[in-house]
Amino acid sequence: MKTFLSIGTGPGIGLATAERFAREGFRVILSARRADNTNALVEQLKAKGYTAEALSVDASEPANVAALVATVEQQYGTIDVLHYNAANLRQATLAAQPQDTLVGDLAVNIGGALGAVQAVAPQMTQRRSGTILLTGGGFALFPSADYISLSIGKAGVRTLTLGMFEALKEQGVHVASVTVATFVTPGSKEATDIGEAFWQLHQETAGDWRAEVMYPAS
Image 1 (tube, rainbow, N blue to C red):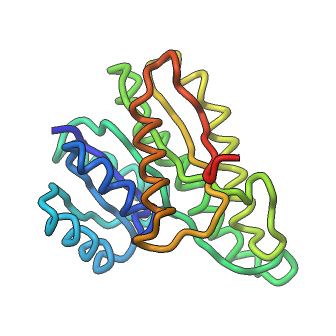
Image 2: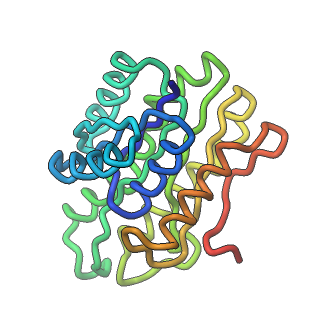
């Protein structure tokens, strides 16, 4: 059974994407800081007959992310798909936000994504197979002064994806992002559509790999 690891799983995009892969026969591992929330999402998937497990992770700590990846590889074997979905959605301007919370937000919004890629890429490149999916955001293209740490984080995710795309492609690994430029609520059509977009990126053949798709399509 193939394994899908979600880091920063929430009830919207994270759950919808995990369920899309579960429908295709993947074992899905959901992870986030609060185990009670993650366990509840796992129970929703199990109730539908899917194979799902829950683990805890603090995405702001690269060592914690690396430990999560190592644990999944030890317990379940190959991680075929990694989805990084963690983000601190803080509403604050640069002038209003204390420096410590800005740094903390960026540790999750971009630092955790970098740590996840660094942790999972070596095994994927060694076997020349795997997909790394990152949840991007429209603030990467149109920054919001009221969500400055999220805007910086999503710009970092986009740069990380585009910057790694060709190098990882040469090693047989597909890294891609869905740049989400709309508000998404749990169980919504938008969440389902984004999950489908991630699935379609994973399904692409190497000659057709894309680094980024926009949602909604522009």
